[in-house]
Image (cartoon, rainbow, N blue to C red; front, side, top):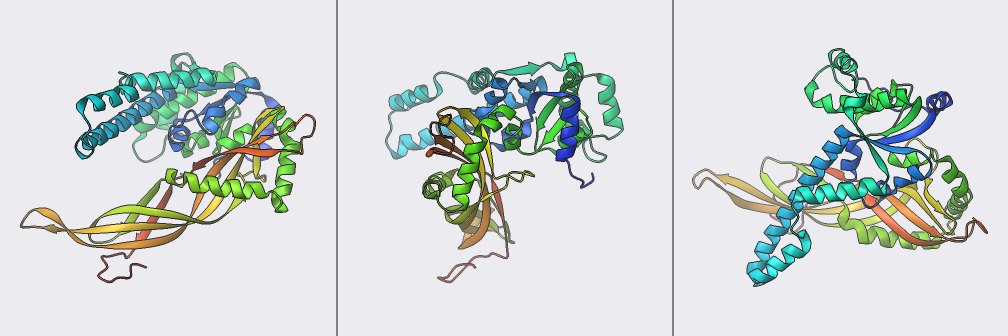
Length: 394
C-alpha cells in the first residue's frame, strides 16, 4: 500500500464538518488493545464526555465481539497466572489449601473468565453510554464484495484478505449509519486499512490519536481554553514547579507499568530480564498532528482534566542469560551471561487533574492528581554475547 498520509488534513476535516454535523465517535479494537484493555482508566474511561456533548459513542457489533473475545482471553491469562502463583505460594509459604481456596474465592468470586469479561464490558458500555450497531441493519453485502475483489481499504492487494473481513464489516456498518443519519463520525484507529478507508469517505474522519478526538468537543474546549493557556504559559516560563515535581514522582511510581519488548541479535539461545529503568529527563510534546501540547478532556466548575504527551529519555538495564544446546543430553545448558544498559526514548500520556474555582478565576488552579499511561517500547540489541569478564556490555 502507498505511504501517503492516512489521516485527513485540517482543511479536509473542516470540509467534511461543513457538509454534515458531527454526531458520533467509533473506537476500533486496535485502540482498545493498544491501551491494554484498560477500560476503567485513562482516556477510555472518559468517553462519556462525548455523550454529555450530544455525540453518540457507537460500537459496531463486530468490534463488540472482538473486544469481548480479547477481554475473555486477558481474564483467562490473568486467572492462570494467579492460580500458578498460588500453587507456588502453597509450597514456598506453606499456604494451606483452605487459605488458597479463600483467596481464589475473594479474587474470582466464583465467576468464569467469560462471565467476568461480559460483566466488565457491560459496566463500561453503560458508563460511557455506548450504543451497539448491528451489522445486519447497516452493512451491505454488495459494497463488501466490491471492496474485497477491488483490493480497496481495508483489504490489501497482497496477503490474507479474509482476515480483514471483520474490519470491512465494521467500517461498512459505520459508513451506512453515517449515510442514514446524514452525519459525520470520528473514527479512532491504529490500523492503516481503517484510516485509509475513512480518508476516502466524505462522512468518516480518521484519527490516529484518541486525544485529538476530544478536541472536537467544542463547548468543553471553549470553557477550558483559558485555564489550558495559563497552564502552558506557566510551564513554558518554568514557573509551574509543582508539575515538574509531581510529574517526576508519577513517572517514577508508574515505571513498572512500562512494557519493554527486547530482541537481541545473537547466535545463542537466551533469556532476558529487565532489571530496571532509570528516567534521565523528559519534556512535553505536541499531540499528534496538532500544534498544541495540551487538550482538555473533562470540565466542571471546580475540576478540569487535561491530557499531555511526554517524551522521556530512559536507561534500561537488561540481563541476558545464554544457553547452548547439548546434543548428547538433548537439553539446553547455561552458557554465561551479560548485562546491557541501553539509552532509549519512551512516550507516555498523562492525564492531569486541575482543581480551582474556574468560573470565578479560570487562571488560578492547583494540580490535584496525575495519571500515567506508558506506550510500549521495543529494544533491538546487536552483537551481544556472553561476557567472561567482570565488566559487562557495552
